[in-house]
Image (tube, rainbow, N blue to C red; front, side):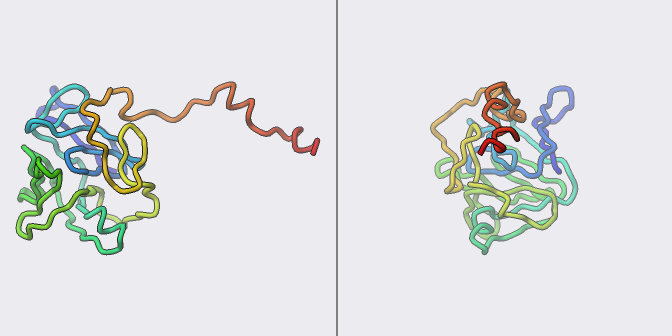
Length: 186
């Protein structure tokens, strides 16, 4: 499990997680799986919970960076383990070296050194990836997208919609559940 801390000082920072993994999908940061939008990159800063941060850091040891789309197709690259992993002004750093930069016009991450472009970069602890457990790619407000894309039409996300808690059973749910006595009647 890893977490992400927005900001530098504990007093002024926001920490999300722990989570199984985080996904950089263009200019949004998703937490999951299942994938929910946690922050968006706008005007050289990450917006999270109504606040803006120029820096965020992934907290954990031995994190790997993975070409999410390539791995789903059986041909993705895996980079790491790295410690630390952080983002500052649209640049992703791994082991204190620049790894990728966000192209704000095309919403792709350009890898330093190779010039390769990635749409989605998965950040997770150094372990075997179980992509079969990832259903439908990243989401926005909990709505899965099967093509691995994130809907950029929504510019703001309300805080209470970012990370919903587990569903709470209602009286209507209990009324719809089959009872043993119903099976006996058949």
